[in-house]
Image 1: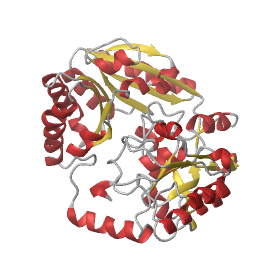
Image 2: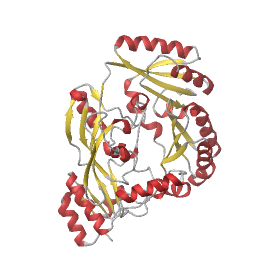
Image 3: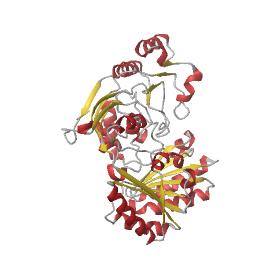
Image 4: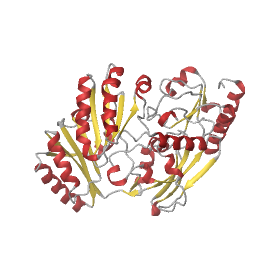
Length: 435
């Protein structure tokens, strides 16, 4: 049903107010999802308004895509249909913060940067740091299951989300999880929402596990002249008693993008602890790097919040595989990118086998056929995956954003989707297998 129907428009105005419902065609263009422009954007100011919007959407059979800051909307397949964009940027409250328990309950539209500023007064942090993530909203980061270098020590959103309040497609507001660590009984529904891309429910509130901010932290660039030297050093680092909290691999393209010395390949490493431990471990790190021909340069701590340009290409792929294969797949990606004439920058997470491949190419079709698909096929043959995190709709239509999926698993996922969203209201078609 068209959102332009006067009665429906008046209903949205009644829910969110005239200032928070957009229908002007020019104003709607920035809210397009994979080129598909919605008929309206509504910006609810509270969970009950989200509930009323979704209840209305279900009754009118509208397709709704939730949106945070919009920085992660490139993830997923193009939607099968789109009527409403549900923008959650007005939900920015910190509902509850108990520093003694290191737990905070926040609304989904709060950005990572705003939350970090509030936690800093108690020297605490949310250990989620996707590259370029400060403007990203908590809800968006969890829905996309985005992570960054801190994953090395602290895990991902699934490890840090304790509880969630979310709105189901029919408008039902549901709470799941807990407000303390390790107290969930029954199915852990909140963790099911992480990475679901808003296809099961709209997250409006999250209870998050926090960590103390280390008293001292130092970071270094360890540059190597060859992938072999970097591989040997990385194996030695992971096998050593050193306790880095962040480790990232950057190729020359990524190093240039973030303004660092363009070594052929480099590892960024940070160590955080009390000052004496940081100094001692930093010395050991230097010796270890020198033993493998590496050069160590001290970096400003701000480098970790400045990694966004490394993955800012118009096309972004995320590959996951066995960690020991990180440098092999990095080399393969570079070789294929050179073959199709694409500019490439690589940002990897050693220890977890995650590689983000940022690309600029004039011919997206050739890149899909001659790079993306062969690379995906080879990685999937070893049990890994390759996802299109960002790219033109044509590329995702030709190559499918999520890659292959086990049919038995897809059957289970369809049942879950049908249970949470029987009317196919939430982000139809954007998730794995066209869910």
